[in-house]
Length: 252
Image 1 (cartoon, rainbow, N blue to C red):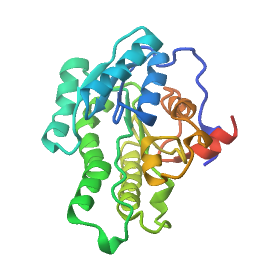
Image 2: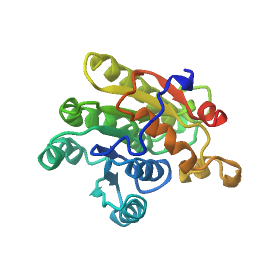
Image 3: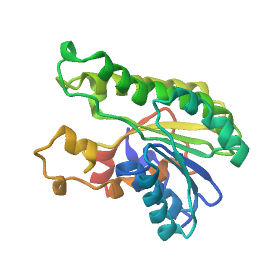
């Protein structure tokens, strides 16, 4: 899709008063997006596995925005705790304006015939099932927002054209289908649901997949974060679409 169809944020703080949940917010793209949204007025809810890492993101948010974030140490493999997240946030905030579904794992880069049960199950649980559970538990809160915005982080690997990327590719293909299905189901509401394929970004996951690559040659997570801000714009009209980070960066 042409990125020019994403609206530009006119106000310096277009997200003032908005409540935003970012998963995988302790590092990489999630951390950068959380800081970007906070800089533009949103109150951030940070999910990650390690409390100390989330506290570092919170410190950065305080420096950037002057306001603290809400920290939720949560392993997305703990399905019962994921299911309880919606009611917990409802008690605290009453609604949710923005959900950035960023958390994910690479799994193992290995032939399909060599994938173990544990690797398959863990990758699908974090990348796909957890996001379904998050949609299920957060949907009532998003419907209470005047302009609910959901952004799923996918990958070009979802095309299934890369050998040895089986578990990751299949999980992301499923995530794309989940996102488009949810977008269709909420088409008559104020919720807009879109997908970002960031492209090659200097993250820990990228380094694990391409250990010989120089991260200095890649765009930083901070460079792609404003793209997420655009898809959180309350005036956004696009929904059910996929936006390509490489194309977006090329036009900046």
